[in-house]
Length: 195
Picture (cartoon, rainbow, N blue to C red):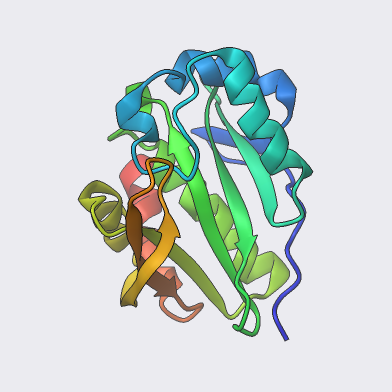
């Protein structure tokens, strides 16, 4: 049977605090990445041009039973700079996906993404006991593919025409997985990189 989707809960380390996404995060989130085409290029929703448009997208995620959405809050500033979610993985036993993730450009190539993934993967394996964590991205998003490989994701295949992009074109989804026994050495390396 497919694993039950976890609830969004608080997770934190020295870099970030992940907390359940609410509409109260929208002003910070819009400041971080609203109206930025590069941030939203690979997202499953059109780029929000106003805080109200971003609030509409956030409300859809918050209200959906398909996502357990977390705001990504910088510990140093207390400001939300993006969001990330757990998603169900139909057809896989004891598996969860980490996705629908974006960060404002100011935190690209910092410890933010690594810190978030360590927190979510640790929780998935060590607290909930999942057997597999899945991550997937657009086949054209080479930056995201490199980041997933860097955290230890193993390429499992490509789902052709997985989803239509907001502009009407089709994306192929590049799928990666991490198993519990593969995670410890990657975790140690990643934590050393931002500790």
